[in-house]
Image 1 (tube, rainbow, N blue to C red):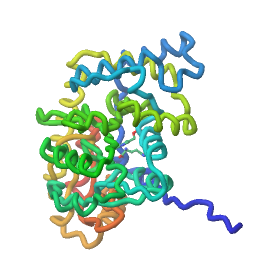
Image 2: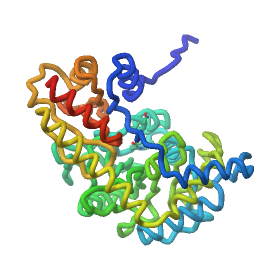
Image 3: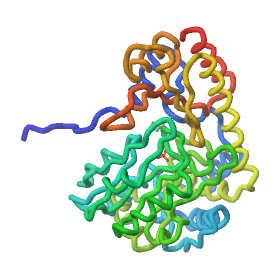
Length: 381
Ligand code: PMP
Ligand code: GLN
C-alpha cells in the first residue's frame, strides 16, 4: 500500500546534539556524564568479558545480578524481593519501559502520564494501543492537585506512569504526593510503572521513596532502575524491573520479543557495583549536587531565573528574565549558535499545554566545562 514509513518524530536529544556538533557548542543538552565511571566497575566488566561471559545469559538476567538487585532493594528500601520471580534485567530502562507498556497495555486501555514526561513514553504508549491521559505539572514547583488526578483517572485507567526523580523538571515527589497517587491507583484498581532511574541522584539529604514502598502498592507497582545512571555509564544500557510476579510475568513475555537478553559481562559488572558500600552511593549524589550548585550559580549570574533542582542530572531555567522574544526552542537554537551552549527546550517534554519559557541544562559534566559554559552565557546574555 501507500506506506507511511515512520510515524515517529526525531527525539529532541538527537536534534539538539546534532545542532551542538554543527556549532561546536558545549552540549549541556542530552543528559550523560563526561567522566569515566567507577574504575572498579569497569574492571569487573573487562574481567567478565575475558572470563568468557559472552553468550546469551538467562532471559530474566544473570542470577548474580538478580540477587544483587534483590539485595539492593532490601538495603536501600527495606523491600523483600524474591530474586527468582520478582526481578528482571533489561537492555536499559528504555527497554524496561517498552516491555512494561507492551506487556501490560491492551488497545483502548488508558494510561495516566505526567507532563513534562520523558520523550520515549508517549510513542510507546501509543504503539501499545494505549490512550494517554495527562496530568500537567505546573512550574516552578511542578505541583499537581487531587482534582488534576481525578480528571485523568477513569474506569478505563490501566496504569499510571510516574518518573521520580523527574526528568526534566528535577522534581522529587513528596510522600504526600505519592500517597495521593497511590490512593488513585487503588481506587481505580490500576497499576503503576515507576521510572526511578535517578533513584540515587537525589539532593539536599532528601530520601528517595519508591511508590512501591507505600501501603497497598507492593502488588501494584513495577519499579524501573538503570545502571547507566547509578554508575555514570549511560552507554551500557543495563536496566532492571522489580515487581510482583503477576505484573512481571506479562512484562517478561514482552521482553522475550524485544531484546530477550542483555550483555552478560555488563550484568556481572553491575552485580558487583550494586554491592559497593554506602559511600559510593552517597558520593554520587554529593558530587552531582556540587555540580548542580556550580552550574545553577553560573546560570543565575548570567541573568536566567533558576528553578529548584531536587535530583537528576538537570536544572531548569526560566528565560523570561532575559527579555528574549521567542519560544524556549527558539532560545535553545539561538543559544547554541550565538553563545556556544546547548540546552533542551522543556516544551519538548509536553504534547499539550506546554510552557514555552523553560529550558533544561545538564550539569553532569567536568567543572571546567560547567565554568566555561557559564562564562559564555554571562558574556552573551
Ligand atoms: N527514563 C528517564 C527518565 C531517563 O532520563 C532515561 C535516560 N536517559 C531513561 C529512562 C533511559 O535509561 P537507559 O539509558 O537505561 O535506557
Ligand atoms: N535521558 C537522557 C536525557 O534526558 C538522554 C537519553 C537519550 O538521548 N535518549 O537527556
